Length: 83
Image: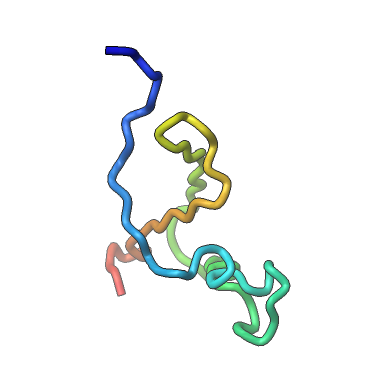
């Protein structure tokens, strides 16, 4: 069997036809949907809890960089609760 050098793919889930255009319309020059794009104002000086930074890159099964991926993360609030 020939080795193709593929990366093991992780399970995926389709979230809908939203991609970055639906999540950040102002960034994509689509006005009138939201006053500000979702997620751009999640933290301010009154937000409680420790600040963290999450960084990374996403690759497809052939090892090519995926430039239009969306990652959804969930985190509890400073009291350890989810809404």
